[in-house]
Length: 299
View 1 (cartoon, rainbow, N blue to C red):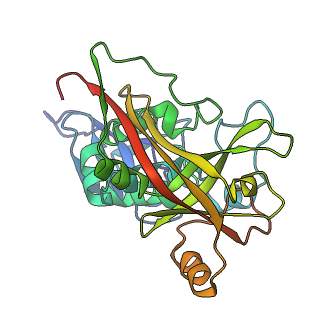
View 2: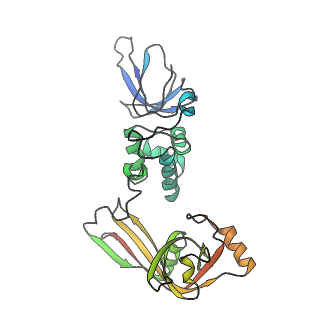
View 3: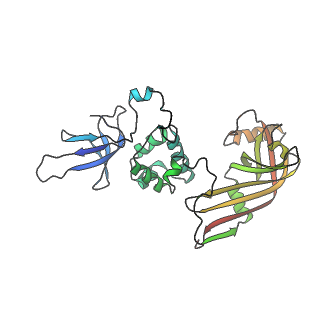
């Protein structure tokens, strides 16, 4: 007997008075798909370790989990029949969202009512879970299945519905600093060489209350050097219809001290997404910090 994640295990008991049972296979203990399996029973929603007997059989589903050896060595499917996301993208999105919310695998698996081993597999390998498992996982992470599948990757934030009773409030300077210090991607407003205004996204860090980003000397973000600039960071939660934004204004300068450059490089959380040689650090020391947050009116 061999199975894949998401397949259905059915037990047709021959014992008198014993009901037929079925459940979804949510965990494998052998890479070749042989027993035992972690099964979530449809009648109790509980997960148990099952060693199938002669009265058990597998109902394969279209959505399958770990590939066989032949499938693993086969070239990827291309064209209209291919899935919307590339291999492993789902797992990366799940892991990022889980860490963003400060959740461990055990807690996330408990909320999603799935085996922690299955969640680990989803995060670390190309996988295509059942629709039911995907819905439970999205609910556990407070997001949507479309977001986990990357359906909105090419859409700007703010596509969701506005709150029925929103509350817009100004943020204090300390809260602005706290939100800004989470690092990530922000936008710097500069004047281009032709005098036109431009807004450019950059990967940034915050060190000692100073905003810093890496760029190339001949790039558009480098135009910030020697001028007063605006730097904006925001977070929008489409699913909940809420979010925040922080605006920092300050003078931009090149970081030249070797110790300061080394410290920034060592503490950087990411490298510039745009790639290439971007070793010039630009720092912005905010002289003004303002922000706003949208939440439900009852919060």
